[in-house]
Length: 68
Image (cartoon, rainbow, N blue to C red; front, top):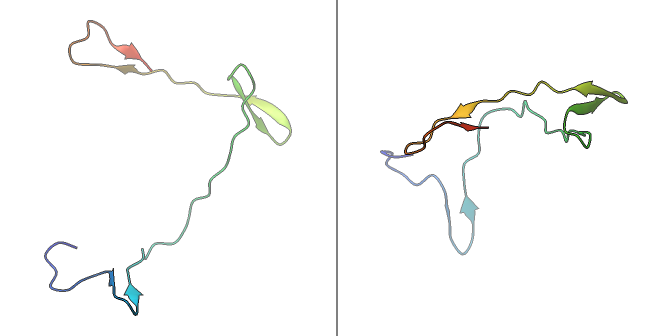
């Protein structure tokens, strides 16, 4: 951390020290199964429709926004 008067992490030939986060792991990763058309996802053995949101990205120097 900038401004502190000591080293937070480091190592020597004999030992090493470091810091860890103090937050708990409250998120899980999940791999979605999407159909070939990219319009539905698999949930409990059934395909459900995806909510697809399109946004326009404004790029400097471009005549029109780029849909994303």
